[in-house]
Each structure stands twice: as structure tokens, then as C-alpha cells.
Image 1 (spheres, helix red, strand yellow):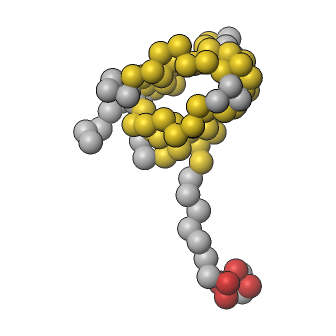
Image 2 (cartoon, helix red, strand yellow; image 1 turned 120 degrees about the vertical axis):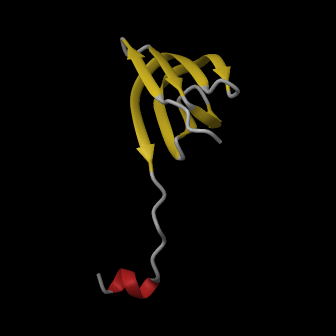
Length: 86
């Protein structure tokens, strides 16, 4: 997939526009998960609604009360021995 520009615009904690998404992982009224630049972005809030969603153009527009945006990275699993002898 060619590199897409990514941008996140948050207005008044009630309007969120994200450009550059690769896929939508989860979409509920309280949390949304999207893949952006190979990482997972989790949006938490209340009464979240997808006003516009286009995976072809990589654009998502959410409305509602947006409380947090957080990138989640995959943690590498360590063996039991490595965890004991930190």
C-alpha cells in the first residue's frame, strides 16, 4: 500500500476527522479502533457516530463526545525466564 498522509483534526472535543486510515477494527458508541500507519489508534468517548467512512480514501469523520485518542503498540511476548530475570 502506498504511503498515505495521515492527519487528525479534533474540534471542540465533539468532531474528529482522521485521514490516512487503512482499516476499521472496531466501531461502537463508546470506542473506535482504526489502523493508521501500521498502528492501532483507539478513540474513546460517548455517543460516537461515524458520520463519514471511506476506506478507499482513508477518511473517517466521528461525532460525539471524544474523551481520548491513544496509539496502541503491540508488545513483544517475552519468555517466562526473561520475565523472571529482568
